Length: 89
Image: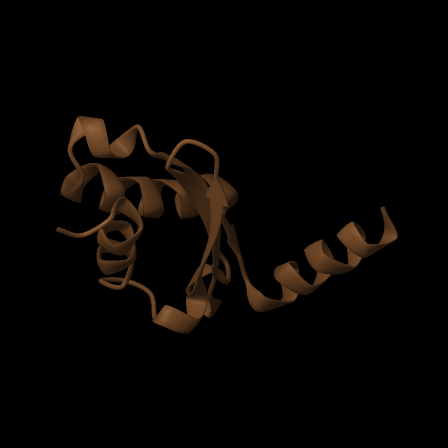
């Protein structure tokens, strides 16, 4: 039986490569993470989140969705700014 992370990774791989998907592990078998992709170029934040949410909503049960906290969606350039800002904190 797949873990929730394996299932979510499989779903996200329908649209993104393994290299673009990064997971954070949260307490209580909850997951979150980042998707870093050039596919997000020229997309508004809300459109990015809708793309990700639609994939997960379509392929996960209500119970499975409870384990997914969310994913941040960055272009590679945005991720670099994010990482630099975290270092400065």
